[in-house]
Length: 362
Figure 1 (cartoon, rainbow, N blue to C red):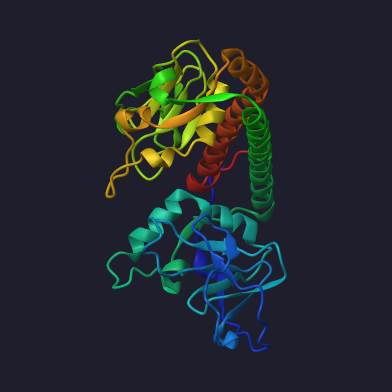
Figure 2: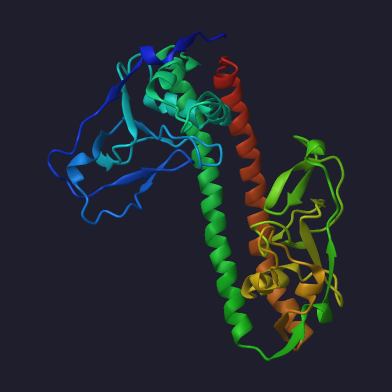
């Protein structure tokens, strides 16, 4: 079913209510992830009456689009009845929620395409401002209310499932760190360099243009960046980001993955496996000590090979710790795979129903 595109300005109106009651709490900022966050503004000596009041179900956005990494700061207030925001922000509301749902509209704003549109429309102005007139001139598909509700319901299911698996992994990660720390602190160890017990190699270069929507996971300097038709490693391996601001971060990869040259691959010399023990050891070690370069942070193989670590003197202890951690990390990798699949489906659903102006009941 093809949806009709409408001018947003016909459905919204600006709200400018000041804090006349001089309330001095619930001051919020707006993040580029389209969420409200506690404000970090210094309020000492501030005239609180100048702040704007935002009510439940109203939107707030930051007209200045510069210095935000090509993202638009906009959010919908749903978790409280009232809050305060900066007087530099624009607050608005939907005129008739029987025609346009706030929860539907925020889905449109969350799309990367809207960020790019807002940035493009801001260029040319002195301060790169996406003003109220430009917001009103946004064109978007507005289907019948029942269809909007159905889209919001399905998207909400996706979001809750993604959060569920992400939350599970956060708890499992804490459990893994707790087990490793307890075991590691109660065993005999000897000081060694990484070069004494692991082989470290660079990943392989892969142009971004060759990334695909299906295939095997590709790891860059900040985790998974896409997929590719080939893989480099049959089994899971430990990798450490070696270029850019994320240098020193480490991950366990999925089986059959491609590792780019923005990461270093770590493998035990004496035995196959033990990647779960090694993950705990890498988390325990301050890898940032090996980072060099100011303009472009990086970690070289030579630098990290010389890094001193305390290694259990008994190989059987290493294997035992690895066995304890293995089921936890297998579950985490399984959860991550589901989360990634849900994220792709989530994005495809939004693009099909919102970007394409289509709707399909599924």
